[in-house]
Image (cartoon, rainbow, N blue to C red; front, side, top):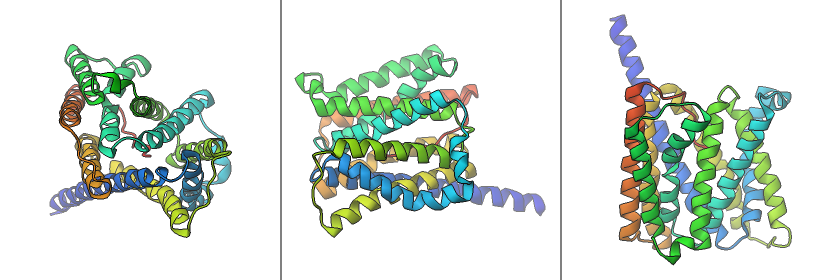
Length: 304
């Protein structure tokens, strides 16, 4: 009976982890849609400033519980700086891209993150990648090129913002994986401080008056993103990463749905084909990692 109870409890924890991951992904998608709506009327810097203030509404109690001075006792400060810089570029470039491109288009670029991570992990984390995964990486890159549209449009500034942002996102995750002994509170706090400073600089000369609804939306942006991060962090402690990782691709589905509902955006054939190729390549890479038992400890996405 005790064994059966233990199995049942473990099953309940896994189900809870799956539910938390799905809710967290939905919150990240809502956060992205809210960000697209806000940067249509306000400068990216202004949105980053108020978003960061909103994030500290959630982070404040966590910092106090952790003990504030723990923020300064971090391993490998140089790598911490690189991770924070990449995470800040990720957020700023994401908002710069969605100001001009449909949400699903930008999210397609970001779904290539696992493909970039597979390639980068070979060089930075010493993970061995066989020929099958290298082939999947190349196929995934082909999907990115298709989504970019092989024409003069692929050189448009918004597309380059999305591409550069997705690469910065992948680098920040590789650094987070390398620095995984650092607490989540510390990691998120420093990248939030960096986003706040970057926002202040970018908003100079571009600050605009806003209504109470606008200010509330920007604050809510930070609260939603931080809550999503915490939900996904908890989910990864309750269920196996091999089960949860593929659920990240629901972000693309939500991006298509929310883009259509709120912005009347309908992905064209090239975006859909590119997205399918990227998702299939990413799932194959993760599957091969799981088979080889070389999947490192999972690190939740930073979100946007």
